[in-house]
Length: 343
Image (cartoon, rainbow, N blue to C red; front, side, top):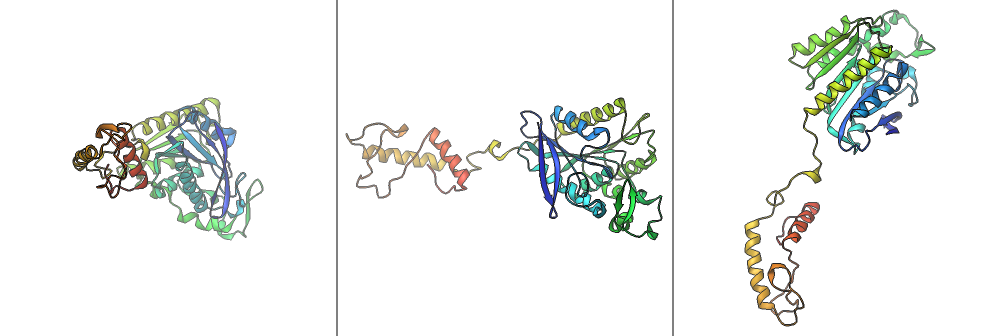
């Protein structure tokens, strides 16, 4: 099932697509972060195909346009890596709050600059448990390497009629995805094409060294002959299938979130004193027997009869339940957060 979705971040609307496995109930979820000048579908519809494959594997997916890209609010000229990191963290929260999604099993995928964003979002969101980087940018300054950015008059044209703002270029030296990803708690998978001419494979090695030096879990796989976006049928299929399989294995090892209604609660947890209840029941049984008269039309549970509300010794008659009624009362007590009565 594919659903259009819109959510806000910092006063602007972001547009995306939510992929939900059929009959989903508390399934893992993954956020996808597109690359520089990209969108939620990505080149050769890589993200669309990947999201559908992940959903078939039992994983919910949220792919969306960063502010200034695709159909989301904002101008590309105003985008910064910091704004994209903020958008990604917000998307993680939106996905985690979906009723179909297990908030304890959230992952993220990023392509190219989206890999840089995904790395930083992983470090800044406690929800992310698994991270996949496809041909990631390890040093954002690569965006302006071919220009002397310090001498530019802003905004200046980058490519294809897109303008870069001064805020983006000025912040490039301050963004360090390698340092941010170094101490993440979850495993990381990196896929990088050996024929990537945009970001050579040596760049992603920096992530591996940093994570391993901190004792983290990281796998890097060089996909033979693949370019920057895995733009061939075989390379594309391999990247998608390998990632889906990896996510499935990682999420299978993480204990699913248990909904409050599904948690086992004992009488003691609910504040019910069974011994006191037994004593009370014994006393009530005796009282019921004393109050029994021929006017009683039927019996009530194990108490032996329904006592008359106007019996002289009963100043404040109460309804007392037994057997299944106790379980019902316990649920009512939990729902009302009131455990100051026993019956």
